[in-house]
Amino acid sequence: MTRGGEHQAAGGWLWGRWSRIALIMALVTLAADQAHKWWMIEVYDLPSKGRVAVTPFWDWVFALNKGISYSMFSLDSQQGQILLSLFAVAASLAMWIWQVRAGTGWLMAASLGLIIGGAIGNAIDRIRVGGVIDYVSLHAFGYYWYVFNIADVAIVAGVVGLLYDSIIASRNAASNGD
Image 1 (cartoon, rainbow, N blue to C red):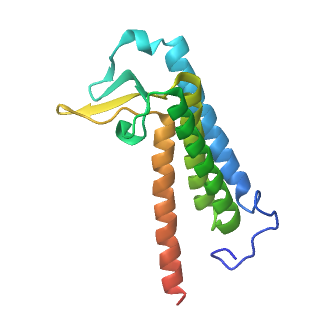
Image 2: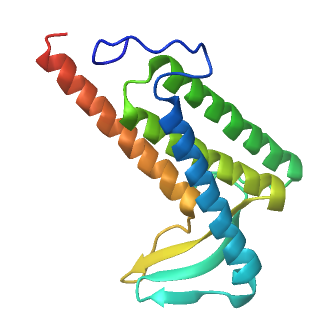
C-alpha cells in the first residue's frame, strides 16, 4: 500500500506506479550531467584554461575526483574506479527497487530519480576518464567550497526531497493517528 491507502499498480520488482517519474528524472539528470561535462571538457576545453572566473563567487575549474565525496577513499587505479562504479550501479538498482516496491508518491520517485541519474552520471565518468569530472567552484570571503558538478547537485537535491517526503509522511501518519 502507498501512503494514501491506494494499492501499488502491479508491475513486479522493476516497474511500479511512480516508475515513469523516476525514470524521466534519472534520464534527464544523466543527459544534462553528461552533456555539460562533455561540453566543458571537449568544447570549452576547461582543463587547459585553469581557473576561470564566472562571477565574484563562482569559478569554473577542472578537477578529477578519484574518490567519493570530498575525495575520501581516493582510488587511483582503474580497478578502483570500476569498483566505485559498480557500487554506484548497485546502489542505483537498490534505489530503483525501493521506489518500485515502496514508492509513496511523485516526490519520492522524482527524488530517487535525481539520485540515480547523478550516481550513474558519475559512474560513467569513472569508467570513461578514471574519476568524476568536477568543475563548479563556489567561494566567498576567502572560503572555497568543494568542486562539484550537475550530478552532485542532483544527488543532494534528491536527498533533500527524500527527507522532505519523509517529514510529510511522518506528519500524515501522526495526523491520521497511525
